Image 1 (tube, rainbow, N blue to C red):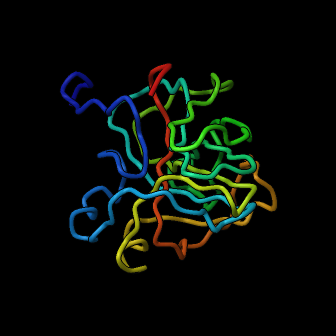
Image 2 (image 1 turned 90 degrees about the vertical axis):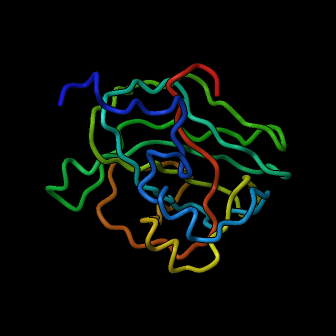
Length: 187
């Protein structure tokens, strides 16, 4: 199949977008409406799988800040190198940015490094420095749906996404935060 006949991704990719691996579960999972909520993982990365069928160039990362802001947030993308090892490799990240502005979408500055992503499977990642940080999020009705979604968790020891992740576990969370990447300079 040539690239012209493949479905183009939306300009923003986030855990709820159609490119997300768990997108099909959303109707069955009794997701809540979007509300502001605390992110309980401090100095840890949350990872959400997504798939692309054509290449894209990422220009920005974003978060949908909640009703209280605190600390820093780092957003990035990891590849699993085609599944040949258990190590995830960071392609790029926003580097930790101070959360700024309540109840707004915070668009982070231009990215550096490799931001061209080809067809394949990847992980959106986010790390927090403060348990007081809030993002708008949806909540699964049970942990079972979150596990099916494919969310992963990794203890980073800081709010910076590491260059590689060699071991991670299924995330024991029911909140799915709104954050992601954009192929445009705005979200």
